[in-house]
Image (cartoon, rainbow, N blue to C red; front, side, top):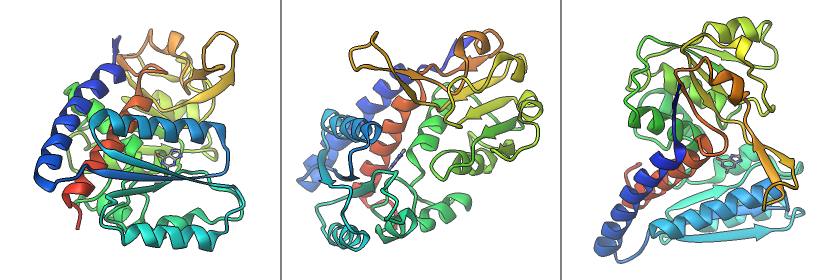
Length: 292
Ligand code: GUN
């Protein structure tokens, strides 16, 4: 078994981004700028946004966190998005999900200028991704593709099984793996909560992307010998053992599955760190005006 080491790969790519950000500052006279809007007090969301902001500073980006109470109206939120769309000093704009129930995430996503949509959630970016056109790719799938690329893993001809069909991970991941690109060119099966026999499907996989959000859902008996295992799960449980008071578990039972896998991502230290890299790369591209 070989480790797909998010710590190592994210550090290398972040160093490249830091240098590009310095070059951007030298030529444009300002830093790439990411704005993140957070609504309410979801603990995991607060942690993710703080990490995004911290990483922006690390690579020499400007970052702004706008925090609203959970009772902000949908129209006030969208007014703010329109203001930021029109602000030339803002390159990337994200609204952390999930949002409170009274706010429709589809309307919010569609309100973001697709040229600033560094989360890649806007329908324009989704459509362009499917057609292999210049676009922002959602950060987690993008980070996974960068990880595969870094290790020179050519997935052409492989059978990929994606477990989970979320808009943020599973669904875009299935599109990326099927695209005529490297990595890509997989035969893809997208499984979800209504799939009849998940174990049978996953057993056929040369590459598994586990994005279900259930601790240790993928067990060793579900995995083919030599499979590549990508674990997207970040399942937080309270724990007295760690400084943060939480312990993270993947969607994959790492201890047992790693005995059969050819390559595997750990949790923590795998995909989560690559998600940040995907977001930073998108923000840099947005600053450069690469997406029309
Ligand atoms: N919630 C979980 N993942 C993400 C993400 O990548 N972007 C945003 N905006 N919200 C999320």
